[in-house]
Each structure stands twice: as structure tokens, then as C-alpha cells.
Length: 121
Image (cartoon, rainbow, N blue to C red; front, side, top):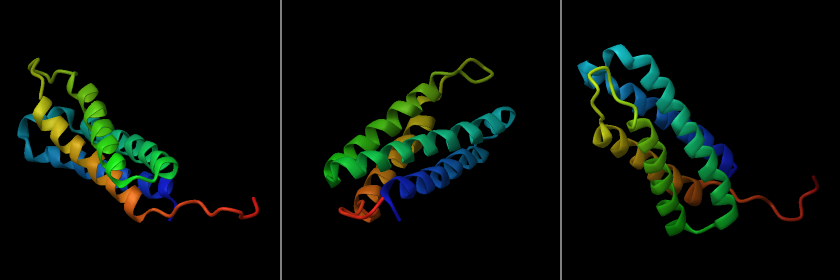
């Protein structure tokens, strides 16, 4: 599987699981649809970006650091939105987002296939 496709699939699945994990917090009930959709999109974007970065750089340490950074950055933007009580949940949102980016950054570097050189296009 190509690195961008692996990133897209893995990021989307992990983003969906991240959003579904909000069911463990009863206070997240009124915003559940927004959380699931937002987390899935955040994972999709992270995965796709990391897939293209992995194709270009081909460095495991750099992929991990960039994946973690991208996951934290996208999660930070999501955490800036307050809940119904006006509270921000940076830790609860950024921790799983950072882990998602770290896992996708690692997986795209380690398991994705590099493009073949010299293949007819």
C-alpha cells in the first residue's frame, strides 16, 4: 500500500476511534456528533499529510516527530473551542491527537511502500 493511502486509511480509522472515545465522558454527550466528525476529519488530514511527507522524506525519526507535531497542532485548534460550559479541554483532546499523529507518522514511514522508480506512468 502506498504511503499516502496507508496514512489516509490509518488516520481516518484512528480519528474515528478517537472521536468515539468521547463516549467515556458523559459531559461530551451534547457535542458527540461534532466530536466524532471533527476527530475523523482531523485523523484523515493528519494521515494524508503524513503519507505525502513519508513519501518525500523517508526518515523514521523525522516522520515520528512531524506526525506528533501535526497531531498536536490540529488537536490544539480543536481544543480551542470551548464546550457548552465554556471550558477548554486541552489535555483530553491533545493527548489522543498527538498519539494519533505519532502512530500515523511511524506507520507511514515504516510500513508504507515507496513509489517505484522507472515505472511507466
